[in-house]
Image (tube, rainbow, N blue to C red; front, top):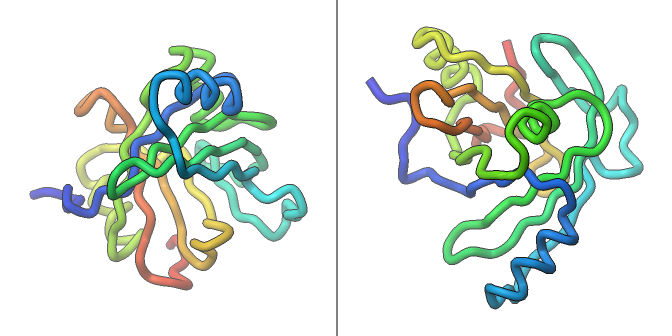
Length: 162
């Protein structure tokens, strides 16, 4: 039984050393009209206000994101900054490259349960900020099965991880 509807695809995420340098390189090859660069969490966020989990423990990490309009979806560039995260792990172990595909799901808890039943680990999740405040994102280590990580974002506002 499948866990995620492939039609609910949102974006592909790429881990990079430097968002701004990567964007400049991309702009030499691709016509890029629409993008936005954001700090995650926002620079004024307080640690106690943002739930971030890494390998089963509450933690704090930051990153610089660049979202580039790509057809009907986006390309997400992620530059890990401070703290331990799966993004920093990927950069250290594999270097720059395609990290994940992101999908929207109805329920974070139902999806987490379905992945767990298939023996697939969730090494990192957290509370969304900005336009997705009230939602939760989570990464699942599907590298053995697919060669990349799978990320989800729930549709239900206010859902809390069990």
